[in-house]
Length: 222
Image (tube, rainbow, N blue to C red; front, side, top):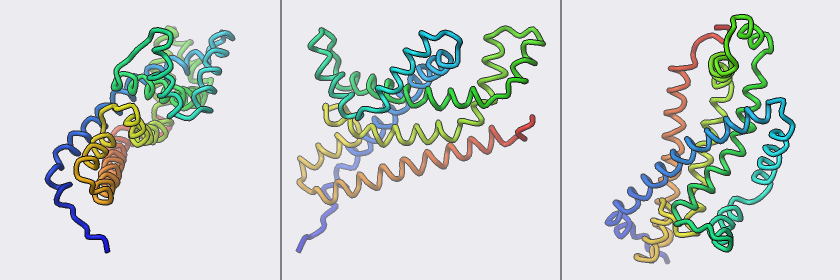
């Protein structure tokens, strides 16, 4: 019979906590940079420039229809063949940004297109510049509509980031693999990792829900 022994895991809990912090930091950086890519992609896709829409469509479809594992392998192992080399952590960040940028583009595009055309026309009637219309008339109310999808995308991104451990990038999953190799307590290590990922996801979900109630609780007609 198997004898459960969590003592080696508890003795090295600081290693796992540091890995959890690295996962959160990597996810936050990827989400912020990915949102910049997403906004640019959504604006390009809703513009009247056919070439931009075509390029964004190709980018989104390629990323959404290929496995993330293959994407990160291509960036880390494939690009050095053409002279582009990255450290594991940089490759992980780039892969996550590219991935979340593609999914975020479609989320933000849907938010932009959810704004009634009448509001945009009203902004033009008030002599607002195209940038002011985008910022105050389109993006601000669109953010309320897409906030749940964006927060879900962040949590999905944070959980997906565990894949980056396959290229030796530093995160919670890689910390767990190191601890498992050190203690050989596979069941205990990966059970604790499961609980930690669950707590991270549940914790961020609760924080995002509080932010939504505090920031987006005004009536929709406001």
